Amino acid sequence: MTSPAEAWIPPDWPYPTRVELPTGHHLRPLRSSDVDLHMQAVLGSQERLRSVYGEQGWPLAGLSVQQDQSELARREAATHRRQSFSYALLDLGETELLGGVQIDPPQGSDAGAEVSWWVVDWLVDGVIEQALDRFIPVWIATEWPIACPLYVGGQLGRRRAV
Image (tube, helix red, strand yellow):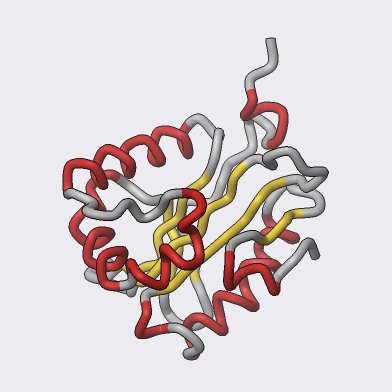
């Protein structure tokens, strides 16, 4: 029987474990040990993130450290199994989580994947977000075995399949 991961990502495809951005920041798979940095980023931008991802129920109202760590562990395991991919946007020293990228299998569409990303409030409309906006579609098109990605999420709605 074919697993869901094999249906959309080849089982032997070596997914990226560190991706350098032109801003000096980088992406790497999200880990459960990122909980403190993740909580700070998410709670500091919770109102805007709920306006973007609220229909998906994220981030949870009253999110606790234990809930977040459990969710990060689930995402970390899903990445290892190639079921979905969650990346943290980090500064050079990994002292601050500045956003995230989510790459999921398609949900009832003809897309090859659903891709979304976010940055903390203080980076909205700034150089780092603009660089991420330019980078992600090119990265997905050139480095991922995904045809016809769908870019999803409230403010991300302006970005569609490329």
